[in-house]
Length: 123
Image (cartoon, rainbow, N blue to C red):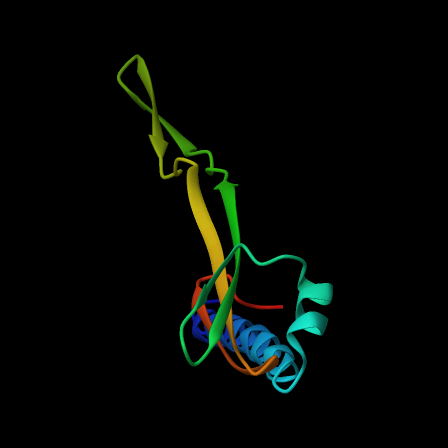
């Protein structure tokens, strides 16, 4: 089983990369599209910024997730006529955030590029 763990970790890493690559490929498909078509498909942006050269349209996604803990195992042993039960292992649950911020660059009403930030920018 121990020999399988590195292989399993590698497969999980590769599957994560594949989904990030899929998201980036989808974003590449928007390059050359009109600003109107982008907003029709994505909805109104969460924020925008414009300078003399370009407009930047940003969409944000953020999620709060809870990873439940695992219960401990118990070992019972006796010493003389006393019985002791000891918990071993287990872990508490925890809350974690996932987010993705996608910004498109628009020049002359056409998408010319994009940028992503976050740990949940995948499909």
